[in-house]
Amino acid sequence: MSSKDKALVEAEAAQYTESLVETRKDFLRDPYVLDFLNLNPSRFLEGDLEQAIMDNLQNFLLELGKGFAFVARQQRVSFTDEDFYLDLVFYNYKLKCFLLVDLKLGRLTHQDMGQMDTYVRLYDEQIKGADDNPTIGLVLCSEKSEAVVRYSVLAEQQQLFAAKYLPYLPSEAELKHELERERERALQRLVQRQEAQE
Image (cartoon, rainbow, N blue to C red; front, side):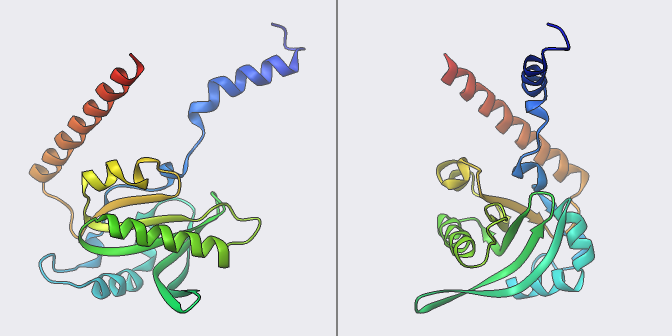
């Protein structure tokens, strides 16, 4: 192939660089370490978590990831006769889309994901601009449910995501345990993919 054949060169370049393209998932983390909020891990409410994030917004933006800017707190979106209030709204200037964050104490539920799906759809319909990409929803919870992640819209990972937050930096033993758990999950996913290909 000669360098004069522009179409072939572009096709080959696209083929080899496809895996380098960043996805929405690449802009989000899991877990988020929120130790800078100085919350008592045994006693705080969702409102305390939200207020602590607002009081430490700069640190939260750094922990959130690259390209995020704060938009609103408790932003109202309405559907006919019902109002919904979004905990936190951010905009990612690299992805050119809004990020809605719903803060949850405890374990992630399918109701949480259904609620976030509603928020994302309403936001896209009422607030998102024509030149914005589809809105992303992130449920930030203290404990993820693997069943909800596997059997809900989270499995598609298009617009809705869930991530765990840690109110303090874990100990070395906790980190080791978490890494071993993640390694085991990754191996299970790899085996499932191989079995699906056979």
